[in-house]
Image (cartoon, rainbow, N blue to C red; front, side, top):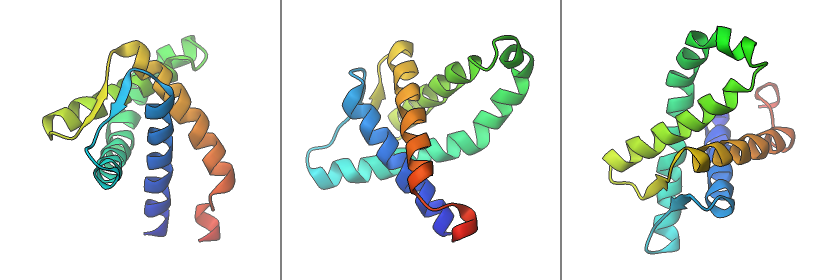
Length: 127
């Protein structure tokens, strides 16, 4: 349970930084508490999308991932971010990704922030 909470917090931080740095990613809310609640919901949806859809997408595109020397993974990450934006739009959550370029830049930011957070946050074995 602690590991799930740590991953949720890491996703929240990464998504918050991506929405702050990348111009095409918006996270809206009338108050700070509303934005934090939106961020929690988006991070949970993003975690579910990454846990369920991303492995299937990576398995189906494995030959192309090998052919592109792993660069296709960034495209898959961008598509997962766009899928998260689509789902949050259907749920009336104020998180939007405006186009593929913003999603690609956002996925790069999220990957970098997640890598840094994995160095700082405790691992499963330490819990």
